[in-house]
Image (tube, rainbow, N blue to C red; front, side, top):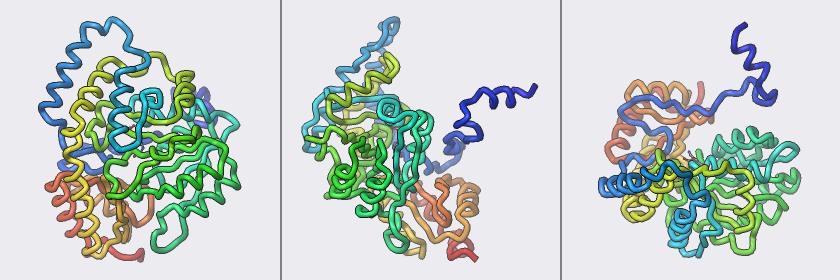
Length: 374
Ligand code: PMP
């Protein structure tokens, strides 16, 4: 018998026919499709990481510190730099913020429970939700017209009140649209539910000046969680380290669902070495923000429709057939992301050279690719 038939019959019914998350991992000269930081880890930090891994290597016969105490302390110190004091007991971490989100859904979702997100947002939120047997509901962001991708606070509150979800996802700055939420919206959504409110702040470090973090709202709100990652601003996507801040009681509950020793000793050592050099690791954030703003300005000048961004990427519209433009850019060596929104593509802000390559390729395509659908 075809193994496919056998496996399909064994698979959980709710997973049958699903497609896996799959941003293409193609070898291209200019990869601007997964919102990584284009800059390599600085040599002095890479050396510190290598030394830190060498130090733990002979101890790899033992399990790592299950509670990753030193790493939690370092993450709390890093978060506290933003102005809101965060303690080690308020911090949890995993192999990327995806795993941290999974822990949240394993603990607070599950069969019979419902999670709500406002689409378009991060595509893994529904996938993580449904793999834990939680029901996913696509909420609406806004109204048609200018600012259509902004989350409308009154509408969000009405949707939360109507659905009474167990978990609400907010994403700020939002992937793929780029804009951050104001705290009044986060507060309003929080007050409209008795459930968990997750604010995914993967791109927080790129936000435009004056954009406050939901970390400032944690005090007195035990149902609120803020997730972060070292994959983006910290240029550590390959290190796989994501984390969250929340009430210590909520953090403690996550120990019920994580696998024992889920953060390996090398992972903890590498992340701590990066955090010890936080200023150096974050040095490229300013350059990336400049390139992001440059993309917004130049795409508007080309007659396209870029969305203002607080992240390290720009969503832009005004394309007749976005998939055809995606393909044509790829043929020119530039890989961007087709996020499935008709007439729009998403591009990561890279180095100035990568941004130039992207803008040059797109400029050449505009005469044949821009405009309304025929
Ligand atoms: N949240 C958002 C909004 C993201 O865009 C991403 C990665 N693209 C993640 C979380 C997960 O990142 P990681 O698992 O690398 O921390």
